Amino acid sequence: MNQLDQILEFTGKPSEEDIEAINSPFASTMLEKYQPQDGPRALSDRYPHAPEEALDLLKKLLVFNPNKRISPRKALRHPYLEQFHDPAEEPSCKSALRITLVCHVQTIEDKNSPPPSSFLSSG
Image (cartoon, rainbow, N blue to C red; front, side, top):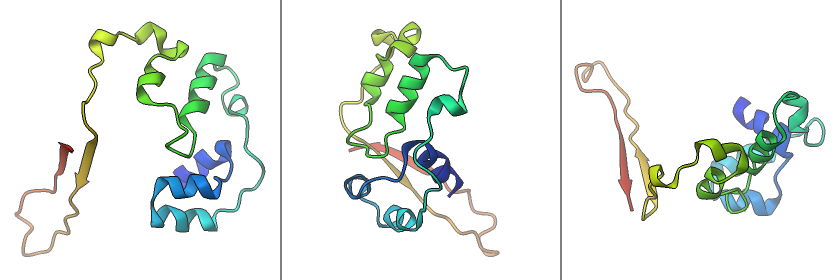
């Protein structure tokens, strides 16, 4: 919850459209309970010595609605990252990447079993 509080401190409470865009009943429930203390805080308050270009990129990354957030491709082309940007070193995935997490509850009987793992697949 703390991570959500930290983000919403700068983005403000998301609109109904933004909440629907994340398509998560759990997140919707969490956000219904969220009561902001004040309006959105300026990133420059938290990072007063950050360059303007860094604050601009951070503002574009901390957009709650994923449909309105800067894309990874555009973020890599942002002026703040210009010195690191090399299209030849930035391959693109041709399909969506789906991450499946397997939940594993270990009991006394299976204490010698291998640890849980995560699986990556492109879909």
